[in-house]
Amino acid sequence: MDLRVAQVCATNRRVVEHSCANEWAVHLDDVMVRRTSWQHYCPDACQRAERVADWMGDCFGWSAETRGAEIERYQAAVDLPLARTVSALAGRVAGDG
Image 1 (tube, rainbow, N blue to C red):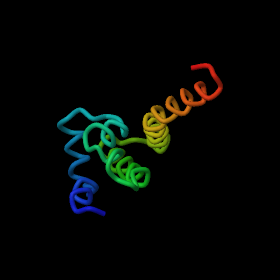
Image 2: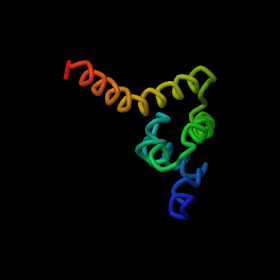
Image 3: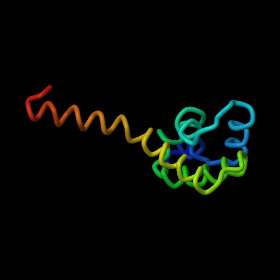
Image 4: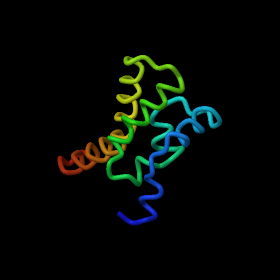
């Protein structure tokens, strides 16, 4: 892994706590996608999201249900653009687009 990518991908609890306490981040996808860009640059983003969800849960007192819902929300948020692209391509292949 490139050193610059490794630095960006350094998952750090303090960064997560800062995002929650000072930047109004309240959802896992917000931290993973917008606050840190870990989703975009880290090849193991899904595993990192699990760790970040634990840390955010500590910050906000999330229940296991809330943590699970946040992970599902994150997965839906990061899968949505891919799903749209695949759907659009499938439509073109079928002659609908």
